[in-house]
Length: 451
Image (cartoon, rainbow, N blue to C red; front, top):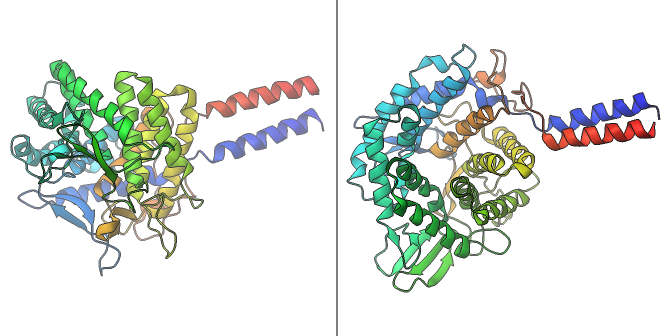
């Protein structure tokens, strides 16, 4: 074998190795902005917010169903509008990306006003004040002096802090008829962010103490030895003892609900980002490894990792996939030693969920979401699935891993009537994967020595 032939082999290897890290062009499709603008223009008055679409088994699937503001998902659509404002700032407005068709910041601000009464009067949000606060956190990144957003963050944080029980060491998730039954769900890890946001504004250390206590207790009681999670842990509020561990939206009490696993991954990566507590990092890594190790061979994230394949089909959950992708990208930022692994995994998930669920004919961006399988609510679009699809692409641009080159006019992704082809017209990566660079250099030096 000549040195030239060996170099040719390396060139082919390199291109094969990096080909798997291309991004689906649909992440930057103008259809995203068109759909979101249409939904924004169609919001009812008094305002309600989209949560999920009607399902596959109706005559007109993919149509958003709107819910009153006092619903845990109400912050996601306004936050989506802010996310498109962020994308416009990152990428500029072009004919190709259609980001110039709306004033996303103004739409984000105006649609968020329906959430303001919830600051002092809500009955359904309970622990989910954190999710509802998302658009106000986005506003403060733009205008740090915005009093409306400051008040919203502080009041929602106070609401969550009031649900903390120092005996249990957690904030209560769902209210129950039995006051001694203190229910905590894994999702609540994501709501802790509002405590950090309020702390940044007020310096109130109590909020951080609550966030740390909740994460520590969750780390101990919600995780199994293999890194999987229980959805629900019930405590005795007077003793702090665990009463039982179960599911609510998963397949069984011993199974792993995939979206819950994604919340755990993302939530603990976020806690490590704030605290640099190595236990939080190792917990996020364990959650991530379990998630990735249990994605089946078809690449589609199932609604529950332990749900049976028979009778088929076992539904996927596109929202679990997009939540996990965001968590993995955050993990890549805070865990540089393993950053390439987490980044590649996130990109692969985005490739697969796009191939499965990108649906030009629906009002949502993605189909194949599972809101709640036990409640027979699956094969839908989900507002937070779409939100995290957009934010994942934004993060990739912010991390220098993607370019804002979007779809061209000839790309099927820009034509709502055509079948999407995720394998074609990809948005290119702007940065190569570090471990492959190292391997290339090592093998090249070795080849020079041998030949």
